[in-house]
View 1: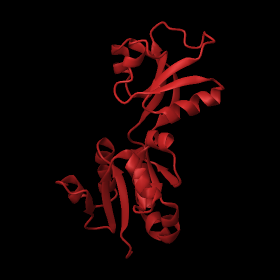
View 2: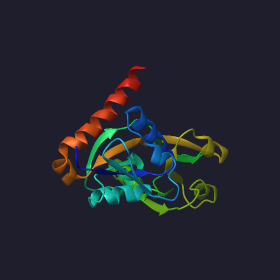
View 3: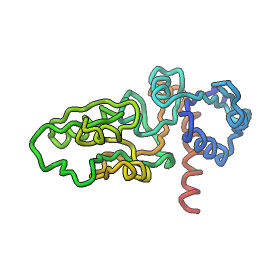
View 4: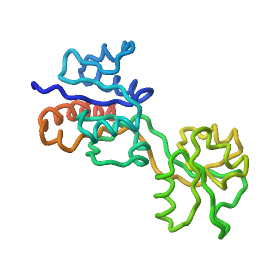
Length: 215
């Protein structure tokens, strides 16, 4: 393999889990483990350069072809959309989008237009469109749990892992909106240009994921 591929990886927990996966698949990730201030890292034993980026930027870099592949949460894919191949569920970063309301409130038992707070307006819009419901969506950048507490909205749509934050703020999840985990995405042109190289990388990841399943 002569072509060095570029993979954009979401910084934070997904990066840590990605490094674990790569190392288990035989890739030397020492440069990523000690990144310093550098944002692009060449793996010494495999023709791959890792680009460390924020989640929405991972999709942007892959879409525009400056990175051949990316690792990003399904939450970002659902919210941002885009043109690329989603080739592998990596199985880590698992959580879910949930619709949550104040304890004791009857969300569906009224004909008025409900107001929903979310950091993810597109995910929220799609969910309620499928239900044929008209809702007002208010985008919140910080703690969405505040919106129903302050009577700004009737409910929230947010990512839930344990539900502890909801419970602490008197909210309960009443419906799952979508399941979320980390995904491997590939630029559409790169898939054709570097088919053999990308398939080799995918195969290495798949083999390690299968081994974990059987352990």
